[in-house]
Image (cartoon, rainbow, N blue to C red):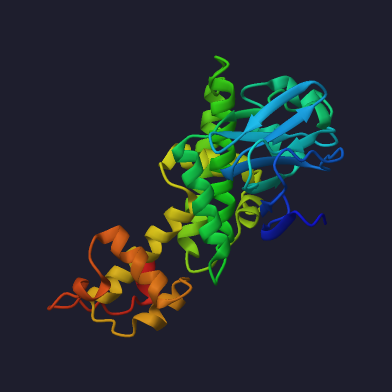
Length: 300
């Protein structure tokens, strides 16, 4: 690795890999030809650099995301001192093709090097906020794979949408039959998550269980419910926690771990965000109604 580059791996989920890259190159220093083996999306968080492809120069700063196709030869130079800090998303070819399909159906017929017809797009505050959210999850003591994967897919959606919107392009509307199939996928996921919301399943595992691609499932679920799968699962956990606390549960740490939270502080922060009060203020002085266990003979 060149001395001016410092790379830290944040996440490796197979179809998605995430890195923080700090470049401390000298001002105006231009390097040898570079290329990447897979699709990469570069999100500058600080600094500025110039990507050179032949005679075409693209300025890259914190207002624009950069799309790098596989095996495209380019050079990088820095017009001002200080280098740059970026978060880089390495994406599987299948994921990129799915992201582009509603804008560019012909993308599936092109080689990986030519799938993307865009090389950069606007980076708005909402999208940059997703990058920082992903980094926080990835750097947390306990990594929530589902949160990282879903937020990354939302990030890619925003970037693809923004890059095409400034060119006057909008995604094609789904057909009625497709919408019905999507609704069925969502209901199956809801049943799956409700049955086992304590477990920390990855997006890939959930998608495999309902026979859908992770990318499509994340988009479909959010579109139909208004929530990510991760947040949907967290709300189920917090509803369970609220009921237990109202009934007099006192060991919040044990309860938090049982419900799938990484720690007491993680649980408390999530509870406060959801209910606007800390868990200790949620206890009912009357407790809950004790319900006797159901006799199996009464279920018929």
